[in-house]
Length: 217
Image (spheres, rainbow, N blue to C red):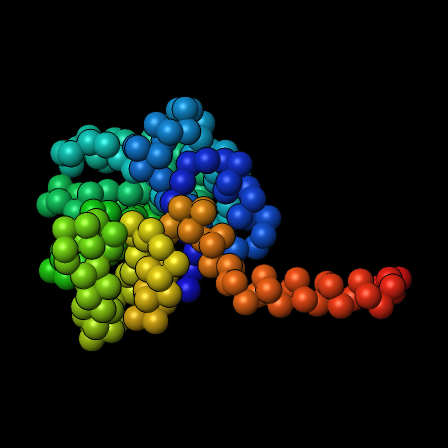
């Protein structure tokens, strides 16, 4: 499974990338707002840090304007992945952008039928929002499983990007179902390493080593 960081915080992105845990980054208008910088400047810096796809989202809702914004964003760096909403205009834009050989992340997916349409439009990534489905009493992981089945049935190359992942259990469950990618806040990705028995075991090892009075090297 690929790990994407869902943030526009350059410091956190650099830290995860230095750990060797990062395969890409997803941003959106809300995350750009939190960063305090312009979308062009922030995206360019992120793209210089991360070798993998960096999703930059159009804010237009009509096709012609989406394409204009997509052309501007795609010039920021070669690894920019244009993010479009799952609307009819967004799907049309997806098809056009993909025909130019550029990556597209179709976002705000909440149903298997929507995911099927995105795959038909040639999306590089489909972003089902699992956390937001959980918020309204539905099962976000059920959606991931449905999309996985449909894509496997027809050998669609579109990668499932489990979005709105908020917990380590979300990450685990998405991996078990077979999501190609998960995008989550840096804190969630770093929390995957934590386990109380790991901490307890390390503490015991260090205590015993101290008793030997030895040093390595």
